[in-house]
Length: 442
Image (tube, rainbow, N blue to C red; front, side):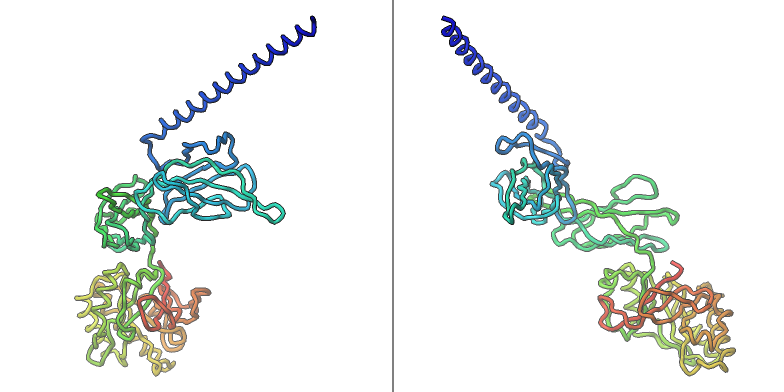
């Protein structure tokens, strides 16, 4: 009798336990369903540019070893980042386009990936499958959950540079072949960013005259891409102030220069030969007009120089008169008018006094008429054949070729403002070797 009662109790316990288990499963299913439903409501209509979205549970995984931490747009594509609770050797990236089937796109070793093979306006989801090695065999772990849907933005722009002129800012960037236009933002001092202009697709330059000279300005440029009648905006690229540090000096000897390529090569200023002196005045360099106009057109600061052949004060004055006449036409200069005085035959101690008078005559003539001047020559010439203490007040453009920007040395010559450090430079847009300079007082 006791055994029979015991069996009855055990049977009842088993039945009750089954009921409890079924009820628990029912509660768990309802809970998971409510969570998924809630997450669906949150993501519906939400901004796709967010860090973390987990909208699907794969293979009934509740606890994952991989979790997405950020999905964002960059200039070159969509960037995904994730964290892991385990150490892995690598990760296989899977991607779905517009809810289509997931396909493998790449394998990486770091916990981030930039998807560059994207189409603007398409929606992408990602999934990560980690792996490690065990006894030299690749072993795959469970896949991550699927990321939220992310809308792809256009590629951005590169090399946003700003050159500061006396009356405006010259903003330039590399053209984006897919762009249908560009948006530019501007920030003055500590003010907030403001959109200032929208440009057409073929524009890679904006000249901003709506500035005050005392203000500090920054710029951001984004590409616009129109897909099926809808505009999409890329991330904004922040500008870099080029300044006026790296420069060249050129003449007709350098051939026809592609000044756009020169600007993109990082050259910020050019000393352009006006011409060369004669006993009665001077001869215009045949490339002066082209170089002057196209350098300025491409946001490169400009200075001019005259190669002197003067042998006395009278000829120096005639060269100065010729220069003054030319400066009435080419007067938008960012650097002083340079007097290039370097003829080898005059590099003698006996000419020191007359050389100094020739230089001061030329420079004083232009200084009295409102033009800043400077003197170009090489170090040995300044030391041997010129009283450099007297002429340094105009500013010195010193030639000392080291073919490197390292170890600048002025040789004790005061007021060196520019250094020509090489005659063998190679710059994109110029087919010949070209002189390279640094602005010392930038």
